[in-house]
Amino acid sequence: MNLRRRRVAVAFRTAIVISVLAGIVLTALGPATVTGLLPYFTIQSNVAVGLFAGYAAWRAWQDRPEPASALKGAVTLYITITGVVFHLVLANPASPFAMAQPDRALGEALGNQFLHTVVPLLAIADWALFDKRGRLRVRYAAWWLAFPLTYLGFALLRGLVVHRYPYPFIDAGQLGYDGVSVSAVFFAFTFWLLGLLFVGVDRGLSRRGAARPAGEPAPTVAAPAPAAALEDAETDAPAGQR
Image (tube, rainbow, N blue to C red; front, side, top):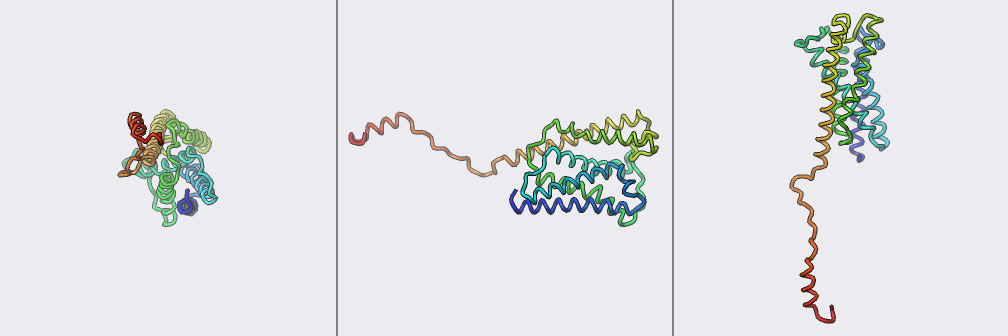
């Protein structure tokens, strides 16, 4: 990564860290406290991407290799899940799991947008612009499900204690464990497909980067002279030069 690209990467990743901090602080200005926010996948995925972005920014500043692509793909997938689920499921009135969106003060509303919109978009852009291409494998899409499934177990166990669940599609009190199982299978399959999409985009960008630019002439290699031509040249040459 050249100096100019490194500087852009550092600035981009610093913006991610600042956006994560702003989102959490502004959201905590509302009724929720920081400790009350921690059980949410939104906060956990934002913290993960903020920490990773800070680490990646430091490595770029030190001119060190980029962090492992598999790990970067994982945190990018998780923050993408946060944005997709919020906009298509939780904040979508047509969704069966839509949550009533309260009237928020300006600061809290901005924090909500930072966590669910700004940070996911910045993280995806950072992955697309600065990650090494061609390193993701199809099997990673299944490995990346480990954290969402672990989170599901955590939310269900916590629900047994506090009788509250962070999201309606894992609310065992309302859906029962059978209903939660159906939701979990659906979302796990969807997240797996999303992971495969990341792998596919990575491979597509890798092939594009490796392709020869259009219009560039193919390299020419001089063909070896035929043996017969060499023999004729020797025959025609003066005796002293043979």
